[in-house]
Amino acid sequence: MAMTFVTLFTRLQNVHLLKDVGMIPYLLYRDYGIDSTIVSYKNENDYQYLTDKVKGLKLKFIKKTGNNPILPALKYVWTNAASIDVLNVYHLNLLSFLSLLIYKFKKKPDGIGYLKLDMDKRGYKRLFAFSPVGLVKRMTMSLADVISVETTILWKKLRKKYKDKIIYIPNGFYSEGKIPDREFNKENIILTVGNLGTYAKATDNLMQAFAGAAYDNDYRLVLVGPVEESFKGFIKAFMENHSDLKDRIIFTGAISDKDRLSQIYKKAKIFALPSRSESFGIVLLEAASKGDFLVTTGGVPAGIDINNDGKFGFVVPVDDVSALSGAFVRLMNSKADWNSRACEIADYTYYNFSWEPIVSKLHDVLEVKRGRK
Image (cartoon, rainbow, N blue to C red; front, side, top):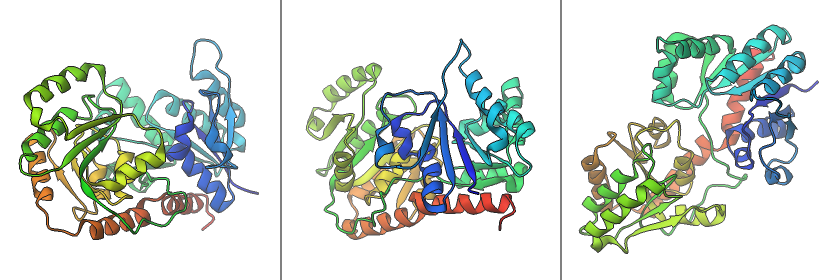
């Protein structure tokens, strides 16, 4: 009888089906014959990826009742725990704590509670805070049988306390089964993608660093994503002070067309994510899969993993505009064969961060945990 794998994620939207929430259960189903289901509230009218991208993955919608948003989800776990081989929950929150608590007492003897953390450095600090919230987070960790974290930096830290319960399972990118790109025509573009102008994304630092590096070259800065209303004043003042860059700093707005976005990634030489804080940063994988050289900060713990320990990227300190600008200058002056390097980056990313090898590792862990290997 096939293993039953249930992901409890009440905020599911269509876009999540091509991220960890959807890809892990889908590939467990497609490649290993596991009976995979995502349990959620119905948050959209149409989950279109179910018809093509993740065909065969099951969705179970539960109904919201009353004023308690987590009660229906807990009721589902209570009713179905004995038939679930692996219960997969996300994040250190109250829903995960209570779900794992119920599952612990209702599950079959070899049932596995699998917690996927999606943790950043601030989340790590909150885990060990001497507070009621910190206590609940630590209790959640103790209830899980398998806990995965997405970066090696935090994996090494957490293993000191939680030992072999902690596994390194990075996030991946959706490759559609395609082989890595082999041909590139890189242009003098620094690219970023995200919610522009939020404090976490540090778009202000990015623009200032570009201004400091752009005086003796023809590089363009392309910024993809919605712009925070509160940031528009900064942009206006910046452009007035740097009128010579008005044609070289391009805000595209949000781009939902994946093919169009893919072509922008493919043209860029450099992808910059100067965030003050990130749990992972899927855009790094999307960029690296198209051969972009990465520039990140210490606030992006996945940066070191994805840039192959410095071979395919630079890491600068958080909020250090001078260091960020210096990294840009170094790359702008590079005599490297950008297209050949892009092939190397794309190959490395495909073979280490596409979802298939990642889910294969997780499957092996779950099989060992259940005593099947």
